[in-house]
Image (cartoon, rainbow, N blue to C red; front, side, top):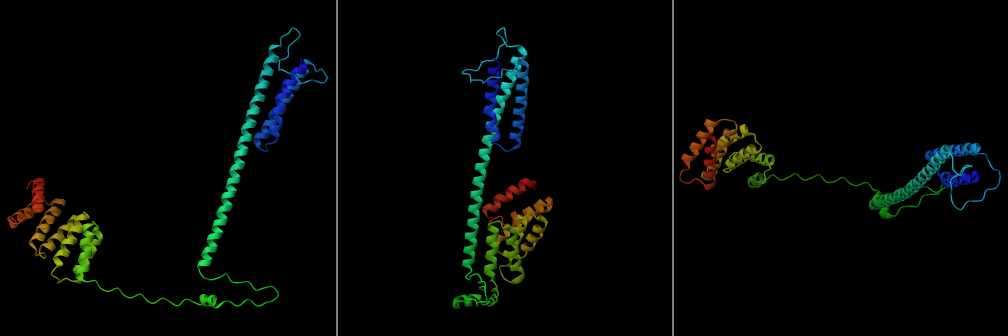
Length: 301
């Protein structure tokens, strides 16, 4: 019975010890300490039961030790159960540690391969860049004071300093048509800043051009699009005295009224709308008439 008890516990320890010895980590050291503690507990248990001293044959089946009456004492059976549970837990931890160790080694191998590949790619790209510059790397002088090999004519020509680039030609001034077209296109795509800048450039460069009123109107509409309503109202008022086309004057008055309404000048806006309805009663465009009706209804003019 005593020998069976020793064999049962030693079998459990023999399963855990070789695996734990292969792991060089803090967890493995902790497991070894637990195994030593279990071994001391087993020796203490064997001391209580008394040791037999003979060679023990490996048992075919595991059976708990029994006392003289055919039953194992309760305290000893409980101690043996706890020892077996701890041995099984240690075996599980060893297997987990071994799996983690294998995963770590695989990850390290993959990382090493990736780093090596990146290094080779970097060296290849650096070599390609150096070759693309057209100049070979300078050769080191040979040992013993030997003269360096003379460079080929193409290499000597590549080594010469590059002549300075010719100064850029000044940009040609744009015509009135080009500036006005750029302002109109910017206004259509709602690029308010560009439209205002181009319109202002036309006004400053060609103030006496017959189409300067169109530039004033573009500038006013760009300011309104940027929600700078006070500046837009002033710009629309400037455009009112310069736009001569009747169709475009309707846009000017409508924009002026909207700008005044946006800065809470309701009475002034209603007066501008009244003037628009009176001046263009017979030839008002359909879109202007619809917008005018909507604005006057909104302001209760």
